[in-house]
Length: 112
Image 1: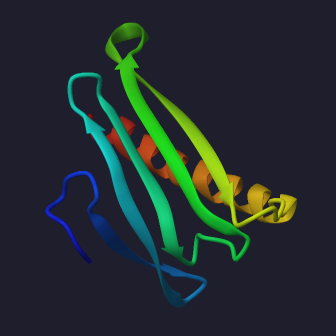
Image 2: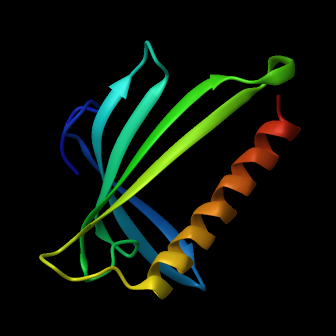
């Protein structure tokens, strides 16, 4: 949507869920090639609940056992005003994130 791919860039990612085309807006916050880190925020679209200003995701890769890799994720929910996060929305979001991670993991294991 805007930017050159570096920090500050906003990307629109479209996907199909339950037969319906949806989108999410990702804002790249930081790319740390030296430490294999990537941070972005969900700032709009289907993945952002009405009660959230944004959802920030920080990821970091590190060496794992037997030549593999370990991914560490940190997710922060930024509420609008004093609105508490909806527990059901948080659980649904975590379930979707876990499912996506499993798909990526399966692909990488099948295609080393």
